[in-house]
Length: 133
Image (tube, rainbow, N blue to C red; front, top):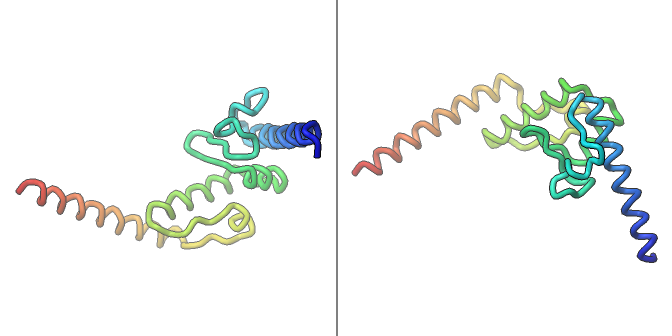
């Protein structure tokens, strides 16, 4: 491939990524800048976009647009993964979530979060005891 052909491929890829990002933003009524490039982490189209503590990769953006995933489904998925991260459960990708896999039920996650908070508190108390002597 020539350098010009590589540049053309890159421009087409960047445009496709930014077009998907724009569609994603419109679908969920999120702010979109005119070019999109500034929204990508490290200004790298096709990588990661960060919206107020919620990160989306190109794969999630494409899935959301192509399958018209609702914002409620996105929020359920991000909430699950936030809980999972806190209590040490495995991450569920959006494709699996969209196909119906829900992992650990919410009631069990709440129990595990309570246990985790209790453990964190016990560790904090133990550390306080150890630092006062």
